[in-house]
Amino acid sequence: MAEVLIEICVDSPEGLIAAMKGGADRIQLASSLALGGLSPSAGLLALAQECPLPVRALIRPREGGFIYDARERVAMFRDIDAARAAGLEGVVIGALSPAGGLDLTLLEALVAHAAGLEVGLHRAVDLLPDPAVAVTAAADLGIATIATAGGARVAKEGVATIKAMQWLAGERVEIIAASGIHPGNVASLVAATGVRAVHASCSRPIRNASPRAIEFGFDSELARVTDEAEVAAMRTALGRPAPASVTSAPAAAEGALPRDPAATLMHAEAAEAPDVVARLVGRTQAVIARIAARLRDRPPPFIVTCARGSSDHAATYGKYLFETMTGIPVSSAAPSVSSIFGAPLRARGALCLAISQSGQSPDLLASVAAYKSAGAFVVALVNDEGSPLAHAADEVLPLCAGPERSVAATKSCIAALAAQASLAAAWSGDDGLQARLAALPEAMTRAFALDWHAAHLPLLGARNLFVLGRGYGFGIAQEAALKFKETCGLHAEAFSAAEVRHGPMAIVGRGFPVLAFATSDVSGDGVRSAAVQFAERGAQVMLADAAGEWAAGGNLPAIAAAPALEPILMLQSFYRLANDLAVARGIDPDAPPHLKKVTETR
Image 1 (cartoon, rainbow, N blue to C red):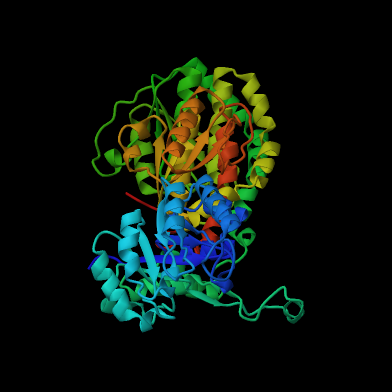
Image 2 (image 1 turned 45 degrees about the vertical axis):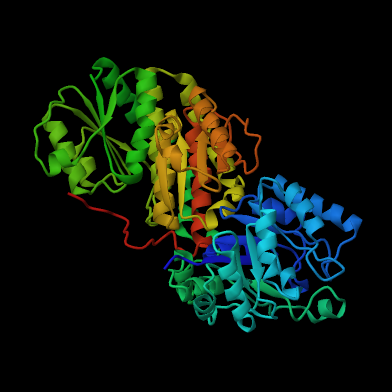
């Protein structure tokens, strides 16, 4: 059986988020649902612009009946213009004539004015003597959907008429069963009528109304708000799984999940990153100078990095640093070549950079041992200076991150980026970059305070997204994609802004979320170009642009610095976003399912 589409009507920012998180397929946006729904406000339209789901705006200029005068008709045209300007999928209209039938003249004008938008008919059709006549009229006008209770007050009382309308509509018009639909009756209504779409508010009463506000007419005892759990229950009743954020809700109610994003270990440890970088820059000057002198004296023919997870993404950042600043090729080692296959290596004179927070994973240790036996110079960038990896290396460059307890690595990954930048600057003799590293902690503090909430709404109900970067920014795109998966339960793929054009961009359409990191150098130009191209397709583009050139909505502020250091600042801002988003989606970022802090692979 085909899935039944669930359309949820909402009239507030809270309702919009609840509908998305609960698993709605489509949103009908309105204001004042207590009055049957009116046209949504400009502010709500702006928020809906960031929603990854299809959104249709209700076009109803006032409460009361559906017979409109000339001024009200002008207001309806303007409301359609506002919905189009907000980038919504469509509008929902309705109008009756004084004689009691459909006002076909006005409806035709409204449909023409909404050219390019999906158009639906609302429940004004239930006031017709025979609602079924609306089916042919809608098909003739090019109207795509009709919401109806079959001429009754609630859908369960109009089953026969809804069924007849569904039969009459066939494939020409989508009939949406509406009014009084809830998880307890939706399955039986669908079975009885044959409809493939339902419309509901899935709301609950608001319990905190102020008696004084009610007395003054500012509030109502009947006020309601969309309930995320009710939307999820609707899905379950129709044989569809509830989203992960909802299935986690019982644990949250028991207090097992954090309610305040600032109370997580991930937040606290990410906030420590500026101090970590300050310690690293201050304490590692001697060892970095010693390693850099050795590398200048005996330049390696190539560099190989050995790392897993976040550390491997830090190594990708290092690849671009070392290749652009020294001209020496950098490759990522496959630890399995040594740990599983035991294959001999030819690496005499090479530089092996092993990066790890714990320094304990057996496959990394096996790989480092193999490279060292093959004649490579091994430098360990490791947080635990007493670890097996530190003991196996020729030189240890400590990350100085201190204990890191959250499963999601943050400050240790940032430290690995900064350590490589410091080594590359010392090796290549770039005194300017060294000086900028000393000023980096202060900029990181500002980066952590930047407001990236523009990304929350597009990602709260998302299931997939792309993360783009290029050059120095590609490694942090990989790291962001990993963090979305492990902390937010959100499937994300990282691509170079160049590589994404070779096939992956085919699946990016309207509403598809894309997070992009653009540095202020030439590599950032490619990211900005891709962002514009995706935005033109209707994708939900969220761009952190250190060049500050992004003019579209949803911009994520970024701090300009040396292009090689800008990814560190953007990653610092991103870590706060990932933490806050995880909590909003009902997931504990400190203890994601099926993961532990130290992963030992062979």
